[in-house]
Length: 421
Image 1 (cartoon, rainbow, N blue to C red):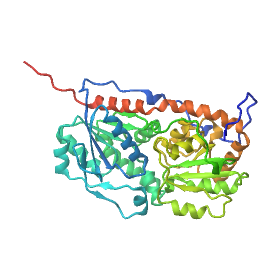
Image 2 (image 1 turned 90 degrees about the vertical axis):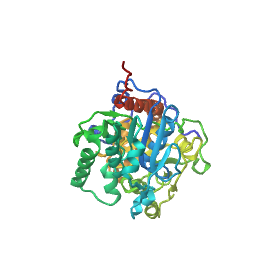
Image 3 (image 1 turned 120 degrees about the horizontal axis):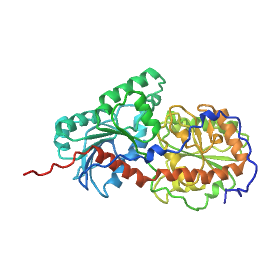
Image 4 (image 1 turned 180 degrees about the horizontal axis):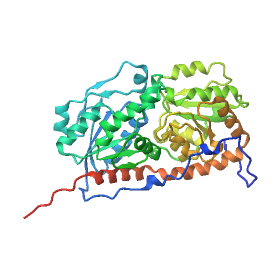
């Protein structure tokens, strides 16, 4: 079914009242800036330290897997992480998974670093990449320093990701974690990579003093804009899609409550694509709805069900209060799917909103219901947003992000010594 109405030229209808000052989207010119490459070997030897590499459901884990696969096309990358099988390009570190339901459901395991093993392993690399701000990265940084190997540290986890998963909303604790990470890790690295200007600003605000570079996670190369048929189950429905970990800070509960309040709840079908600790709670919360949402993991492989949903849904709703970039939002927009985003001050995702009508007050299910209803009732506005969303996503090509990351590596790698005499 073709869900895009004929977008004829017509008078623009005003959206529901919104504070336009909350519309933070702007062209991400900072993400196109690239550091000048140094005279370094053509093929770099990279040690990529990541607590969890396979099996996790966090954006930082998915990002690591994608970047390592792409980097290996032209560089030698050795992964140091828990799990997997040891081999020429893989060092297996012992792991510890805390007895917390959120950690188990998210599939995240902390790596337990062995200092002597890391010192011996990291010698001889051109650069060490540290993916997460945890113990393994702290020790790996010390070992890299002793070995004389430059370090690039990545910022993929906000303190709020951890705190809200355990039910804490304490600003002083968030500031304390930022101070620990900046002093113990980021300010001791040669360079820091941040996925968004928002993330870079958060570190600067908390004392970052070393060179930093914005390198987007980019749009997954497995997600393509396609013309595909919608699943017959939703043929005549207004299909709303949510994508992301089923974690507390993602606030899927807001959309379920908004659905109860919507004037069009009989017509709306909701699909929540993800896995995580909140699945059972969300299913309980959805009881009694005219059409309970479909909740579960959808493969994001090329040609898979998630790609099909991105290309056939009417609207992506992103309620997350904590977002360092918003990979799901970018993926949806790359398929021409407009995103309705929460205007949280702890999230980078609001800048992807293509207009004020695609923002709602964070944590407010009534405002979310109003905006969804408005978009359903103004299909021409929704159709117009499809092409606009696709245009915005073009600035976030994954290949360009890989090239920028390599340029960051080259900016810190010491050129090979020249022979004298």
